[in-house]
Image 1 (spheres, helix red, strand yellow):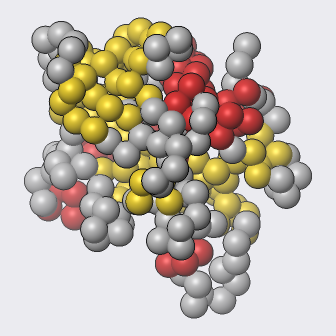
Image 2 (image 1 turned 60 degrees about the vertical axis):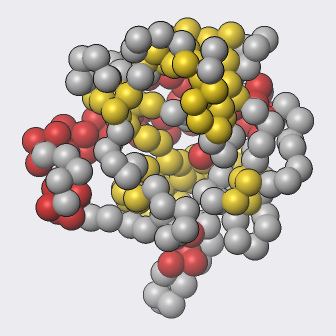
Image 3 (image 1 turned 135 degrees about the vertical axis):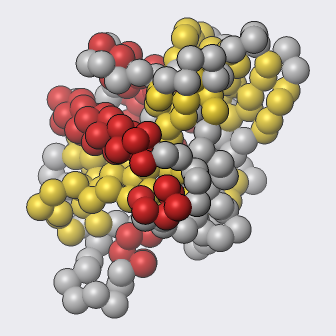
Length: 234
């Protein structure tokens, strides 16, 4: 297999005409303050032992749950021993979009709105807050509004409307699954694309500790890394 791309936490290899193989690694991301942060854009020089296994095992559990509840994903198969997952090739919405859902305010949300009265870390929202960001590390992954996505030709209004509804359903299912595991999910980011062969929308990349913040149900004790993954084991 040929290495096609080295990402922040995964490596992408060739596999078939319409499939790829993702290799999960122990690399972690940091924020600008040098703290381990799933929303960070900087890759740490140090590895977190077991991080790759934790993220892959958590991802496969969540993808299986979503697929069983009508949410299409790119997962074809996986091998935990080899830290790999075979996936359907996807066409992304250039230059790339990340879909964020927040049930509590923390991280970049509070940094962005720190001058707004009442904005504080851990604040509980009365309903989920949905955000869409452009994948642009140098630009700090700026927010983009739906009308701009259509105006810039990233996708049609019809596709956007379909994706907004599909994303909301997926986020609700993910939140419910975390709750079933005794976890209070504060925020999460996921990515969507189109199947390169069929053109159908599907959830891509991973859904793991690399892209979310979760606490126990008291909201006081953060659960991360392998400890978070352990909550999703059968």
